[in-house]
Length: 211
Image (tube, rainbow, N blue to C red; front, side):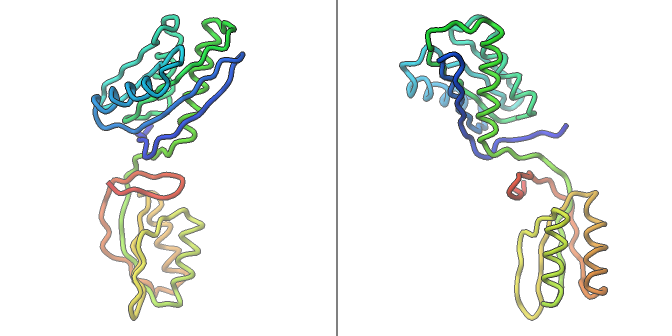
């Protein structure tokens, strides 16, 4: 399973038996950043009963139940981060007590569910290895190449228009040959592919981030 990083943090909220669980997610690069964010959330939600947290950053893993029964809050949040294979994130789950006890199993489920909700509302990227390469084509080939790229899930990251069209694209290694062959076939061999280099990049639902 490949590493994933948080590109942009988000938040999520659930209600269980009148208790509100608010999960806030942030991308962090250092443990100091994680601690500063936790303190910020404690200050923001100063009137809440609990601000439980977990983080993973630079292979450091920490969690806190913040007054909840041991093992019912921080560890379940950490389990969510580990389950999603996140390597640079902190989650603070704030609980406003609703007057009804949830029991240990109910607490575990609530903290996990809210943490998952927070991550689902964040932008998460998967670390990938592949190629960056260049296509030189005439204007007749451009639309065909864009159509193939869309169907194949290939990212066209730059298009330059001169006498011809120069397209820079990124693909996974196992997608490269199939895409190139379809481009050559669709353009009757007129498209020229060059400058293939191996790269690492992060892939999200909306595009890629080159490392």
